[in-house]
Amino acid sequence: ELKVEQNPLFLSMQEGKNYTIYCNYSTTSDRLYWYRQDPGKSLESLFVLLSNGAVKQEGRLMASLDTKARLSTLHITAAVHDLSATYFCAISKGSSNTGKLIFGQGTTLQVKP
Amino acid sequence: DTAVSQTPKYLVTQMGNDKSIKCEQNLGHDTMYWYKQDSKKFLKIMFSYNNKELIINETVPNRFSPKSPDKAHLNLHINSLELGDSAVYFCASSQSGFYSNQPQHFGDGTRLSIL
Image 1 (cartoon, rainbow over the protein chains, first blue to last red):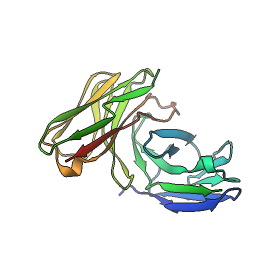
Image 2 (cartoon, rainbow over the protein chains, first blue to last red):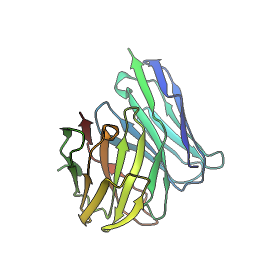
Image 3 (cartoon, each protein chain N blue to C red):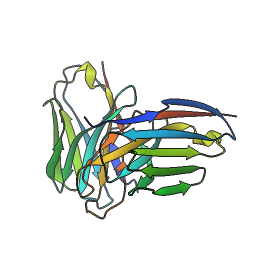
Image 4 (cartoon, one colour):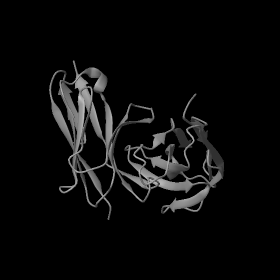
């Protein structure tokens, strides 16, 4: 069975702290995505990771991919309140970028001043 | 200039009714999707169309019927609505191609509440 599991599911942290969200998946995939969702809003794409060892950074967020371990991480550096949201990882199953996304459960991040 | 737009944004209706949700994308993508997000925020694929052809049909009750009149539009019709259908339904689109590394783009969602 295809599974994507995120850890932790809820994260409350102080501004200025660092933390990592983990995403494990049960089957090989040629693409891994990170999305952000604010309450009542759409899903916003953050990163697309395509190969083993891929690392991408945008502002205080950095995502990495280890395809051998079937693990992706989303690292938050010096968190600020604006990063409060739910973060989803997802793998793509299918060919030629027409595949369905299998999502993790989501990690709700709450950054306190 | 919304990329993926869904209507309506909110839908409140009685059990047993039939309703439709519409989706349009202006990104020039050739693949469109419907996802369902439940009350625990879990997202699950329902259907996908590539160039108007159904390519993904997950285990969804046949009360749900998607239709794609052209590659820029994907609609979802739901018959005999049940309480368990209450959820947020997201439309998404992407461009196919082996070398395409673009993510799926999501609409704002349709919040369906069954009374």
